[in-house]
Image 1 (tube, protein in one colour):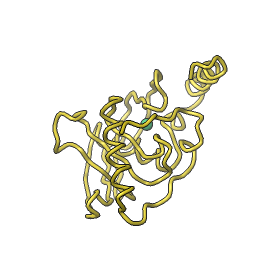
Image 2 (spheres, rainbow, N blue to C red):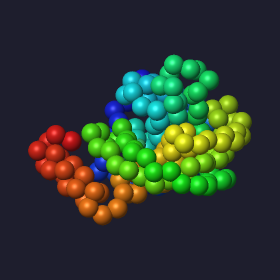
Image 3 (cartoon, helix red, strand yellow):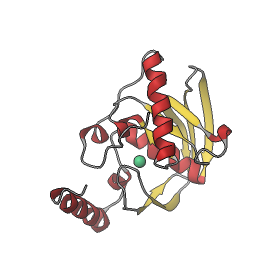
Length: 169
Ligand SMILES: [Zn+2]
């Protein structure tokens, strides 16, 4: 089932999500919905808080569904390595219409459970490393905008608030 994606300003996007306990049928259904919602958007990643569920789960597929082996599901993920630096333009399904340059480590190694409950460790560089960090930020109640400083961030937030007042956000 495709679920509505929350936007900047809605509470679940701005609080820390909690660890998943057991991998119940409800959690499996949630993961199915997350994958379906990500593909429908379309997006290369989605975190549970973006559909209003404050749990530590994210899904990523850089191929947008074209290569089944690219689909990754991480439950209770953590970084075991972060290194280097990259500076790239970034956007988010929860902040539609806005992009900004964000500095992030170039390489990230993430460890977490997959949907079968198996502990997996995956290393990524470039876009994959960026996607890992972007989605992990969602689990900590952070959006890419929170990593943009100064005037650029203020400008985007101001525009969003104006759109919200006009009922267009
Ligand atoms: Zn996002």
